[in-house]
Length: 200
Image 1: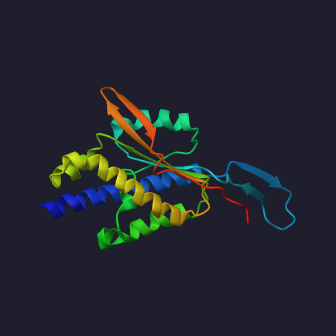
Image 2 (image 1 turned 90 degrees about the horizontal axis):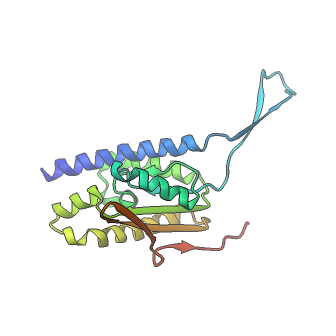
Image 3 (image 1 turned 135 degrees about the vertical axis):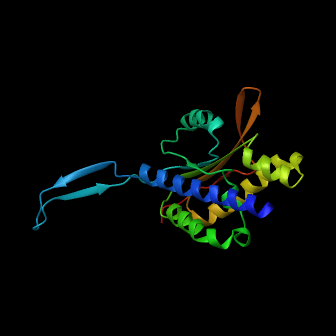
């Protein structure tokens, strides 16, 4: 039974990551085109300019929190669509030895999509009352350790992302605590990385 639950969670995770990657790619569509007078026999020639140095935001895909996440994204000035995956950074924190073999190609595909970009900053958001983390905590009979596991996963995900984007100016990490009907977002400064990047 435990294997079936893990397989279902892993499948949902991979599906959400692929959708998030697609949504991120769609947000990177060209923003400006210039029609050039063709110097060749081509019918139509266009110079395509892409945005450079966008942000990447990775968050949980739980429906109950989407509106709050969107408001926080606007507060941060993030213009691109987020990458939404169950558990947020949990996927990026999973050690390669724990990813089922049949899901490894999907994880590699997501990694390659993300590595093609040079983000100015990467933002990771975790939140209290996360369904996936609460299920894992209950399954392991460790419901009181959910928040500490989330923060440990955020730290591991941060290190993975640093290897993918060594020139990123910042990796910002936020934790949203549920208090009644509100969600309070706060930075985790001990996990956030800011660096001065020189243009080589």
